[in-house]
Length: 544
Ligand SMILES: O=P(O)(O)OC[C@H]1O[C@H](O)[C@H](O)[C@@H](O)[C@@H]1O
Image 1 (spheres, rainbow, N blue to C red):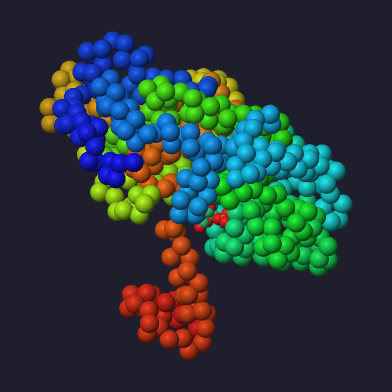
Image 2 (cartoon, rainbow, N blue to C red; image 1 turned 90 degrees about the horizontal axis):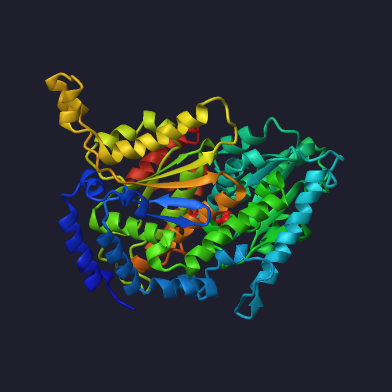
């Protein structure tokens, strides 16, 4: 293993190559190579990925692939799929890919038949979902369940809500899902106040079952349910199920372990959507569609596991992200789904990418000497075009962007989808090629306005296009990004599977809570800024 990737000849070669490429413009790169747009593209399962509008040449790709070879990316991929304990700081395997293995696959890890375990839970989920969807599972008063409220946060919320929204067109049993995550009491209040407890099912999702937000929301939900149904504790069993790795804590909370769906410590929270964490999605779309989603994930997993780096789409996109982060100093990365159904995808990706790769020490604890992680952000097109694209087109920063779209609409209303897609094609072309001063002037633009209307171009983007947003292509898309994140983490030699950085804030919130509510509190031990803020808060709450 190399200790510092920046000390390798491969890294050095990329640095020199970046210096050579700095003056190049996408306009020239395309003009010099009529087949660039066909050649710098790849197919992974049903996703067509055009990376030709990136600031790269064939040489860049070759050098990036060499860097991947140097850090033994292929071997690392194999290690992940085989169940090696890549999450070293928690001594855990990293096996979210096992969640979507077909029933007839074999994988034994640490003496345990992982495939059998996964499918046993999937079968229980399917049978439960079928009972709820058919109305066989009844609430305490005998009413049919019509609303599912998913209570979770982080990976126990962002995946399910994003997938539910993405696959809304596949809802087929009249079940509506709502999602509560924030400990801000307005969230649970506004989410449930107009619901009928008799027909509401709560799915409490927490890997650890110790997350403050989720337990506080679940307690409120329980209180609301019992109040609404006359106080009979027996109602809880008909209206609460849990998804967790921690059976004991679920039981301690008062949920019958019979109503618990498990998963395993080798599934990271932000990778957990295809586990029982996706139960609310399965309740909405059914087990068959959920299975198609898992098959989609698996198709991308197989592509990632078996394709040489030069044609391996997630690996290439991960390497491109490293190229922009470390060699071209791009500060952020936009993700722009041209699909209203994917409106929560950027939020989901923020956890996936930033919680995974926001690390500043290598796997063995050595401080890194290079930038890691990327700041991911975005909004669906075309909305973003009328908001922040200005900065992408004419601002001073370099912002690589992923454009995601689907050829077939779910609702083909007049010419709207063609108009929508023409925006998708127009934006990547405008970003890449822009408009020169000569072109602007030739349109009769007043001389003093010309500099304002020049579009510099040379703004890179990747186009990711699937035939249609289905459970299968959706699964492929999510897995694509999981593996992009893995590739980046491998190059940076960091552990994308722990998240120690979120712990301190949690500990301190618990320490501060009594200072907000107690009497005669002593703020002397607290820093002067926080002490002043807390004192003001206490006064405004009438506590002092
Ligand atoms: O599923 P839970 O155990 O409740 O955790 C929910 C979330 O909170 C934690 O603080 C982590 O940062 C996330 O990775 C996790 O997804």
